[in-house]
Length: 177
Image (cartoon, rainbow, N blue to C red):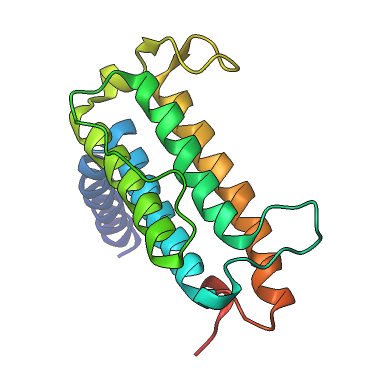
């Protein structure tokens, strides 16, 4: 009886490993970055929308950027860095002087959409290919460029969280049903 049980257990393990193997073979650098970049857009659009239009000029202290300035800063840095990838996708023309909630959110959304279009052009091989990159990064892989942008938007997101909380608002990612 033990021998039969061990064989059945061994067969179950082999079947489970065989079923898991295709998932591991479909992992992709390009797909991972596309998923993360799309998630970044969603998270940033939600926090940008959470601040009332009238509070887009709010500053935590006088020398700091206002809330709308943070949203526009993301758009500007995304554009500056994404353009170094020499993509086929046409770069959007954003209004870098925008100040209204609707206009800065539109600018930021367009830069994330541009990044999505660039990522859809890529393969795992092109993601690890080198580009000139922005001056402060120098030659970099496309993966490093996107990793930098994800980190930059996370940093700015953290600052935006503080601005919302100083205005008595709970960031969307922190809200519980």
